[in-house]
Image (tube, rainbow, N blue to C red; front, side, top):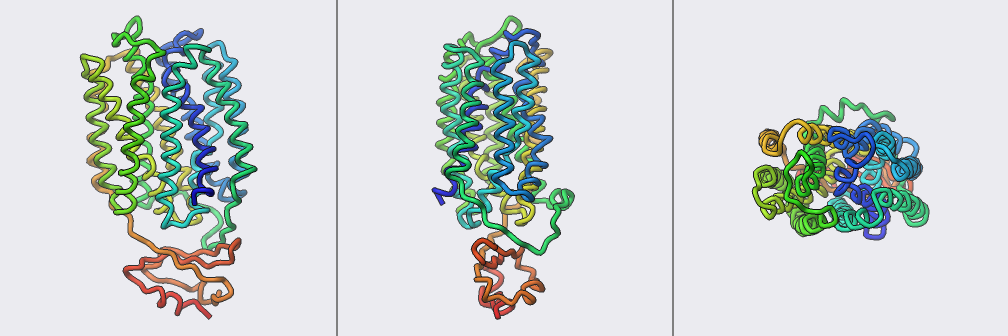
Length: 442
């Protein structure tokens, strides 16, 4: 599993590393560009997310149809071009265009879908946790390095690094990433979006994913500005080069919390409980950040925020891939990540407006109210049923019987043509393996 998941995790982590590099300082350095305003800064921080939201579903569906690898290549090329435009920009509007183009390379749903293709469901939680762990590490490194590099070489240097990492990711894609198996199933060839949104479990996960990412953008707009301060905003008089002193400890704490949360959520099948604890920590974080009178109180709020964020991260993608049927994975992850990026964009706009027209206390109260409503909504979530998979060689199966296979405790079946296997997903506690074999084996 490690050799299968790590190259894909590396591609996603390198891409996020490039994005994360600029997040700690973008709102501060962006204000120095020609034409910049706090509102436009909110747009560029969350700008890539708007086009991510638009293109997540098309990229997810495209990956279901033409394959994961070609789709990943297209996305990485678009992201590369956007990064170069950001690097050469000298005004806020060129930077905004580059950020929009970065987001148009919407591969965020394709890689989790590809991992779910390559890893069986019993090991998928560990695979998603591994992916989440590499992202968290890239997060921590970027938070520490971004402020230091930008202070030394300027904001454009971060985008040039991002462009170089995009090229390196393409090399990894074609040298180390295995080709997923060809899957054949009895479902229609197109995916009906309404079917995905009608599933209450998938809808809940879409909302959780969106709220988590939206709040992340709000935090990344506010944290550096409130620590440093501006002409109109009272801060704690930090300097940009010292921002790593809050980001690195916060993300380290988040990384430490991620492991136990993933184990508890996956091994003991308690993701709902992890989500509820995380939302409570978000509420604590916004309370501390909004009403802090000393910098150490604000830093504790940032630590609470990143613990909450990292506890959720690996479980969200894993739960979506579990609830979605095999022919819906790319589309379901596309919808979930598309909504997440839409909320990311909205979060940037809200934070920018708050900086321009309001104050941190008012915004904190609003975020606490929204998070409390989110907490009440999430209480309706149910933990997923536990399914097992039965693998039978194709030449042992009567295809006519297989096509007529129906049982209330069989979620789905499909054919792995690459390995010549029939795969049946079923509830082991409700139906015996031998009973299923009796229905379809020659």
